[in-house]
Length: 469
Image (cartoon, rainbow, N blue to C red):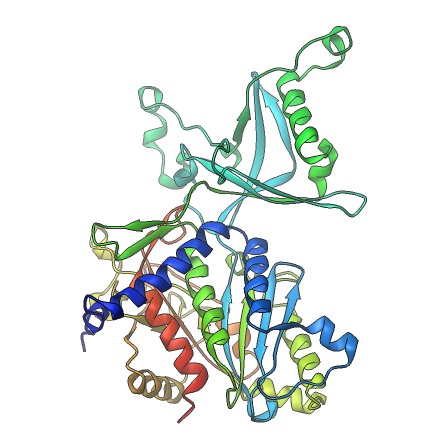
């Protein structure tokens, strides 16, 4: 059952150009949106242009929702739920595209700034599953926010704009690394060694500072930050600043068939999920794009999938549509169909031993369906019903969407998880579906442009072609 390469559907000319145009829009999004906050800000701006209205406005004004109306809810600036109201009752279920917009990275600790041997440094704590050795000797940028005591929110974005300085974590020179090279890969770089180098010029001395200021390089950096952002060192206590790779996403390969960028996991699924919902006008069933935070650390917290945000927001939307009751909400959730839009591991010819070729995702073969994820005996997995998969196969075939099925490597090799099992707790029909990725969780990941486009087409089909679902 080998799947054909999807590029054959898009010969040279207008059809192939459409694939590249969609990929270029996504490339710009990926380059500009390196944190969950930046993703939310960008999608809200685009959504409002597309006619989506903030749910807070709907509730405040007492507006009634009807079929075709578009509404969104913002979860702490780190997550979104967007709805296009359908013609059918909510009780009959929704069609939900769920993805996450957080990615593996380094976070600054709450008290991060220190000086060591005339270097100013920032202390970090890695976020999500990373190979720590991949984060050294790279140009890095700082993105995030600083919340001051007076309620002011200061945005930080340094390292990606033209002319910006970049930052980095030093590595041990090869000439002195004999002992380091004997360590396991997990120990070559320790988590507490991921300190960011940010400066080396000491504060100019005068009679007042000569005796009082001990850490002059750190003080000089703090002076610069005060001038630029109006902050004090204590303001780091209420900051959320992420350390991410510096630089734009880039076309990859002589044929420009691929994209290299930071954060494909899972923005390569989040972006087409939103674009698919925005393309829908008056669906039969209410369409939803759910973009959440914290998936990389277990979907916990108020902005993660395990919170009640989606459930509460759906109750508010149903109420505005004149359909709310506790029983109707429970039925709406139970009867919903979901594509848990998350990435899958692509077959890598450099590392063939961790996968079985018959049940692996390949570049260029379209949208990937993972019946189950989990690890070693499907532990922690949502395992989609055969009936649901059969109906999705029919939808994809009717709409000529290239798709493939896969597992996350060999049975005893490892595995992973997504938000699928959390949505399945409501009794929904859920399956993981997304785009195959090389270098997953590395600072620079790679995807196929045609797989991105087929994901978008598959998501549109899921929202609009309802026969059998």
